[in-house]
Image 1 (tube, rainbow, N blue to C red):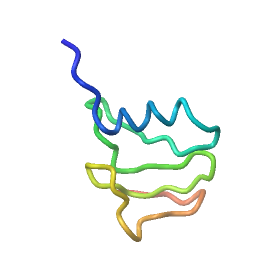
Image 2 (image 1 turned 90 degrees about the horizontal axis):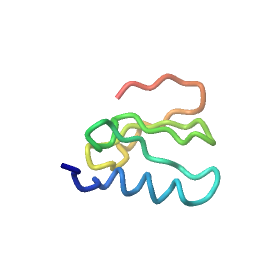
Image 3 (image 1 turned 180 degrees about the vertical axis):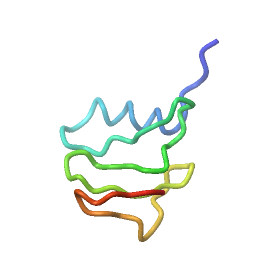
Length: 68
């Protein structure tokens, strides 16, 4: 049985069909947001909640390790 897409998967799929260099959400095997999100074209990373909301104060510059 195929499960419905999750909000993370919907956001990821919508972005994949969009602009070059856009932020693409990372989803786990269950379709949930992974705790660590990164904007590939800039190298910035940050932590998010299970609903994909950015956690204030967690953004790291390119080349900096992040643990959420």
